Image 1 (cartoon, helix red, strand yellow):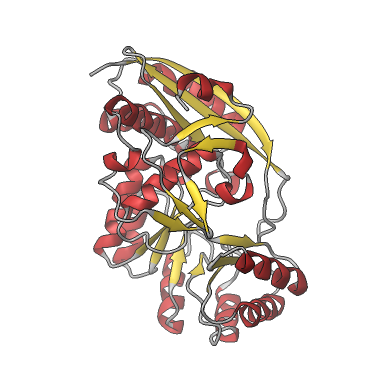
Image 2: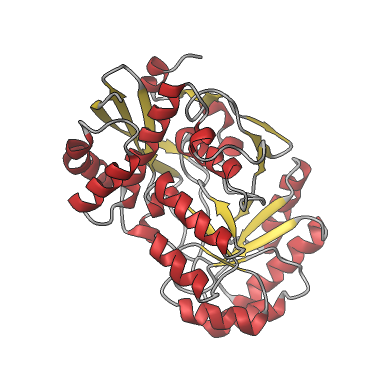
Amino acid sequence: MPQIIRGEVYYLVRPHVVLTTSYGTPKQEKAHVLLRLEDEAGNVGFGEATPLEKFTGETSHMTELVLREILLPVILGLEGDALSMAHKVMDYTIPGNEAAKAAVDCAMYDLTAKRLGIPLYVLLGGKVRDSVPLNRHISIVDTGTAVKQAQEYIAQGCCSLKMKVGGIVEADIERIKAVRAAVGMDVKIRIDANGGYTYSEAFSLIQGVKDCKLEFYEQFLPADRVGELKALRLATGVPMLIDEGIHSVGDAVHCFSTAAADAVTIKLCKCGGLYPALSIAGIAFSMGAKVIVASTYDTQIGCGICLHLAVALANADTGCDLTTYATQSAWAKTSHTMRNMCLYVGDASGCGVYSMKDFPPLEESCMI
């Protein structure tokens, strides 16, 4: 198999729609680290690292440095499809830094799929569905604004909403009830506290919205409170979705073996790429748990890669956080299409992204 002979790292900043959460309100832009790998046969693959500092402690500048100075030197010379070896080498070379490792992992998957002339989802086991519903997000805002945003999303064809909570419990309850009343009972609504509640606050919130027929209660307690999350799940009987609390395969084993959650949010920048993501999804599947694939702030490269993962996982059968294709549709040309707030995967080789605004290396390497 052809060996990887060249790697180039790019730092890209662009405006984005960001959310006010229990973490606060971030800047209205995101910094992305993009990776281009090339093998000796001329095949090219792209990966992305858009780290979430509050989740893993990584910043984009840190990720760029780790890729340039630590990971690329040990990846060059490996065969392009040697994913298992790549993760072994990367983990031996430096612990953590999962966003940087995800960029390498995804670029290798993309390169291999393009070398074989197949869509990326084939390497992930083949697709079990053609499209994924998009889950649209509503910040911690006043009730009137939340209702207006929800109604706009529903008018666009959306059938799945995520509301950020984790502030004042009474205000959160009022906002959730108002949105449910505005959109009706058929629209799926999940709420995400980003670890912003104490146990007593979480319990009070759940009791206050028990008639709202919510799909999931996401990360209601801080990431290290798995035992308390299990107790909250057992005490309330509501479906718990865990995000910040699962970063690795080991975390998934611990969470699901202790019955602490009903579903997991998979972010590639959190777990290190597609290779470990498949194991996490498999553990969830074996325990009857669902998977939400999330790529909220990525460019179309990272988001397209996550789309391929979402269509290949049997238990990712609900709305996924792939919102870049809805919020920045003019920023790239891809083989993927969006209809009625569902994202349909294309059949182009690799991740299916042909060109991207302000990122000419992609256009030079891909045929439109």
